[in-house]
Length: 251
Image (cartoon, rainbow, N blue to C red; front, side):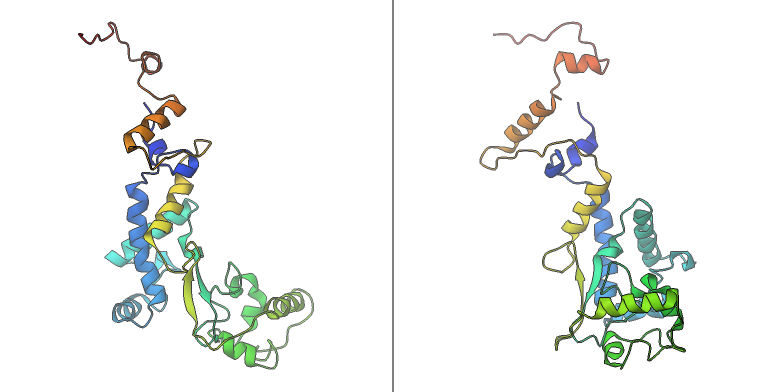
C-alpha cells in the first residue's frame, strides 16, 4: 500500500530506514576510490597509476577508453555526480606538516582546490605540484610565480589568498586524508550509503518514531497507521481494488 522508496527512506525522513541496494552498491564501489586516494603507496594503487595516470583518471572520466573494473567504478561515481551526489567532495586533506599536500591541487583549505578558487594565480605558478610546506616556507606566495601579479583581478586574488592562509598553522604530524561525512574522519560504507539515500529518496515529513523495546512488527504496524497505508477496504478502493464481499472469519 505504499511506495517502495518510502520504505527505503531513513527514519529521520519518515521512512523505515531499510536503505537501498543501489546506495549500498555504490558506497562499496566508492570505497575503492577512497583506498586509491588514501593509500597512495600501496602496490595496487601504483598499478592503477601506471595504467591511468597519477590521478587514476578520477578527474577525467572521459579519458577512460578501455573497459575495466576500475573504469566501471569511475563511471558509476561520475553518474552519481550528475545526480547531485559528489562523494569526492567529502574527501579532504588534513594538513599536518604540509609535506605531502599539494598547495594548489589538493582540497585542504576550502571545499575546492585553490587552483579552482584562484585560477589566475595558478596560471602564474611555475611549480604546479608545490607542497603546502614549501609554499609557506617561501618569503612570499609569489616567490614561485613566473612574474609578479599585476593589478586588477590578479592582485585581488593574491590579497584574498594571503588572508585565507594567514590562519594556517603547520604541525609535526603527517598529512592525511579525511572523510568529512564521518566523525572519525575515516571512510565508512554506511555514511556514504546514507548520504546517497538522503539525496535520492523522498522525505515523508516528520521522523519515524521507533521504540526498540517493542517487537519490530509492532513498530512497522504503528508506522503504517501513522501513514494511513494499512490495506483497509477504503485504501484498497483508492487503488481501484474492489472487494465485492468482505471476508468473514468463522467463529
